[in-house]
Amino acid sequence: MNTRLQKSLRILLIGDSCKDIYHYGTCDRLSLEAPVPIFDENSIEIKGGMSANVDSNLRAFGLEVKFITNTHSIEKHRYVDEKFKNHLLRVDKKEPIKKKYKFNKEDLTDIDIVVISDYEKGFLPKEQCLLIAQYCIEKKIPLFVDTKKTDLSCFEGATIKINNDEYKKVVKYPEEFELIVTMGPIGVLYQYRVYPTNNVEVFDVCGAGDVFLSALVAEFANTLSVERSIMFANRCATLSVTKPGTYVLTEEDINGVCV
Image (cartoon, rainbow, N blue to C red; front, top):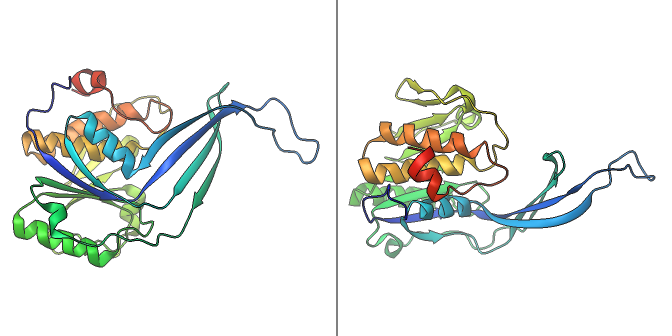
């Protein structure tokens, strides 16, 4: 059992999700038709990606999660040479999002923390995000946001986590908010302080931001301290980049390596 989480809290997670489909095989020869490698597929692994990965990691901490996401199909196909562990190609397949999220107060009934994992695929319109944020302010519900939007003004009062590339593209901020910027091997920036990361051999950065967000929320649920939560999330995300593919923290990770 995960012994880290001490409080039984309900999390509302809203965001766009996908299927991460890993095709494992080998490339031992070139095509006669063109100078390109021939991929011989041996196996397929399917994982929940984007906000679905956040959901899996939040549950790994023992949190009770209410998850609202898109119903249409988004697939990310990754082709990996299993002999050398090289990521050869990614092919994205998606349909236009027809059913977008519409704010409903009932979604937030008996919710302790709201988490938005916004990959900007169209599921979370800006005006609906604003309604969520306003309700969270009114009911004093902590709101954590990871977003690819460049206009962040709809996330009033939130704790916003973005990576360094996203940070450079922001054109507008809310009036009141807290900003956390993840900067890869440099560390994490929060309130003019950089929280350093441990030096590790990076294998795959896929899903590291999802792990960071999940660990940040889980530790905040325990401590109500953003600073302590950042340090914990930093260790968890650092661990995840040493693993292949979209990673979900294990019990051993949470109770041992991430402490």
